[in-house]
Image 1 (cartoon, rainbow, N blue to C red):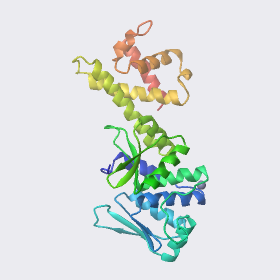
Image 2 (image 1 turned 60 degrees about the vertical axis):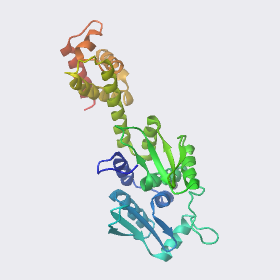
Image 3 (image 1 turned 180 degrees about the horizontal axis):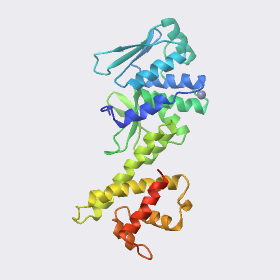
Image 4 (image 1 turned 90 degrees about the horizontal axis):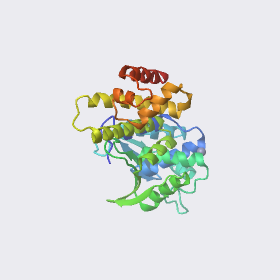
Length: 302
Ligand SMILES: [Zn+2]
């Protein structure tokens, strides 16, 4: 899947990854290695080239290289594969860098594998680099898929097995001339985003899921009463987001009894209007009474 427009979900994730720079030198190397192995269009002893239309990917390449002591040149390119082209051409330093990254074989050939990464911090950074270089997550409004295409099966297998080291189940499949490591389970994708440090994107994915779930519930129960539907849904989405936030931070038990009761009911019946929710309380409550309590809950998270 291509990274669509400026606001594509993959772009947001990459922005988050780019902004969270690795700390230790070992991790800087690993991130760079993941980034070039998956993202570079050329790796040789005389130079490394990377093309992308995503400035965060280019930025990540340039800044990580700089932290490793090498300057990259960036140019606009007329190429279809990427608006920007970044290149490292200092052949003495490139050879040294590839050696440091354990990417040179006995005969001086370039090794295109992750190699044996020992520390967990470095494994994670390698995967962050790999995602920056080639990863994508589909638009969650359409479907759920996270994937990292690799140029060959062995490198793709490295990615699958690195994710496995953190208990993330990934599949591998050939596609066109590449191999793709992928996962389609939305919960696994959420966990991977958090693991990669893209927590804002993780939250966004969770919220979109809730919204879709509510819309499905409502559509199933609608029976033609569509007039107030979208208002009910939008209000319900906001209420449920607030309730989830409380549940996942301080816990619903921290709420006073009357608020906890309505919070639980809202979670159970995502599609009901306020007056319908009120009828299910014991004793029943008016629409404005329910509204009052839900407002209090929303205020808790503001
Ligand atoms: Zn490390």
